[in-house]
Length: 446
Image (cartoon, rainbow, N blue to C red):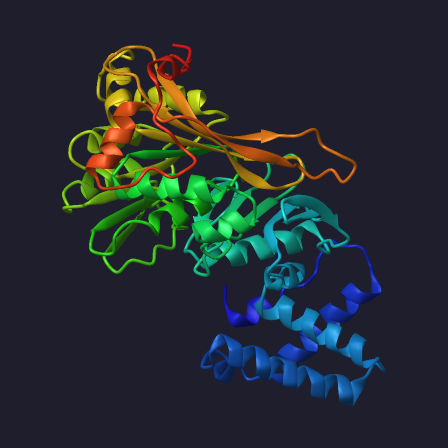
């Protein structure tokens, strides 16, 4: 979209509101005053400053008479419409907002601190919302129209954006922007109540001893945040390859190669899948492979990598419990074009996965590790897991805040021995299981 059309785009079809009319009028006046060739040569920040200055002169010369706050608000709105994303600009500037959900021109929700709230904001019209959506997807060289009504992409600034428009979205064009918080360390997650110090020590020992770890949880439970924190425990001298749909991980080590999948182009060609990247990563001499999320046939490739020399790898999966995570891995692995018996996938999972870390988002918006479970089954036998840590909630009180305690359970002897061989001490809160404790395992269905 040209600079002229971006600034001159009218608010068609919206209600005749005074503020919307002012924005449209002064956007047109701004277009008459600026030199487009000069504007195109400026950096984005300089362009905004120049437009704000020119618009300020126009308002001073022609009116209307406004208070200082009203004048600043009008200038910001006009320039946001011209260069930015209109009513979404202040939301994107608010660091406390982690998700922006536009359910049509009249319905805007955000998530703050784990809670969803509706805002008294709206787009002037469906056309204005579509212009904003087109501006967003154009930054990643994508388009959205009736022939391509869904777009899922990562913006250059790091946010993940999903768009779906009519006829698929019945309430109108729908836009979801997920913003990813800065990388948290495990000690910081302790401060947020996601885990306790003894669980941190145990997870750190698992990572350094090269256990294969699956982080499981529902949408918005903090899987990527925890995966990023766990990856910080990997020694800096190891070669790490990350594979993601939308690059979200923020690893701090020096020897990191980041791979990101690519959707098909407008002709339906050129797609590079997660599975393609996982396969390619095996040829890149990785010490560890981190898969942002497994959701299809690439699961089988990841499991084979974990069980054939790439110990210490990490991945996330959508599941509501540790048992569900193993069952989901089995289902996803069967989606590969490799013809492998469903039962044989149990062998792959039992030999590849050592630990499942389950995350839950509670009613108060808090995110906690609700279970750390070890996979102790072998071969093609039914999945068996041993919980070694879990969160035990107390009844919710009048403050509606979830309180509880973290419980530490015995570790199977073979796991304790593996930590000993890796020179990783057993955290003080955990002991080695007696024979009778080993019987206290949970068995998944299947």
